Image (tube, rainbow, N blue to C red):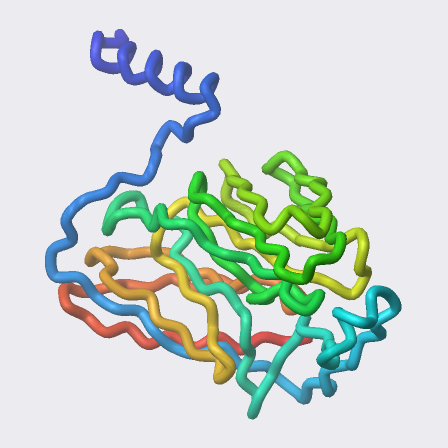
Length: 238
């Protein structure tokens, strides 16, 4: 026999599902005795040197500095631009709702990998005073294909669903970046030495994931104790 509370819960779940809002949305709360998760991402085996890309258009602006393939940046075996995040955390510190900026200065996306929480504004800049075209490729979010003529210096977009989104410029084929959209604030992008830190984590058991555009994904279970320091390293292969 189904009681009234069960019926109410099922009704709420149906309404949320129909509205596109997750039935179990992330909850912002005060975190007591938070822990920290940190470590590094390394590459097994050697890595090729970053290839210089050909600048074939608008050379007056775009060829001022050389352009290199950033899809796999490795220094001393450490992998940069990998996104490390907790995938299954339900509540914790407030979401980061501030805008993030994706620049196109010198016909190159900066940064190459940009993280943003769902619903937060992504401001795309065009300081080059030439024509760019921002084109995203995604599975869960509606694609964006927006022209940015030389007089349009700013474009603001938002994404509702968590996923990794490829960004290209249709006007300049060498331009490439990634927007990693996440539905919680527990994430980090590895620096040039492959290091990451995820702070203010509520005590509990979670799944830690690393994502890289060419190396794929890995996950590891972690347990965060009150005020604990968790060290986690990932080793990835080409």
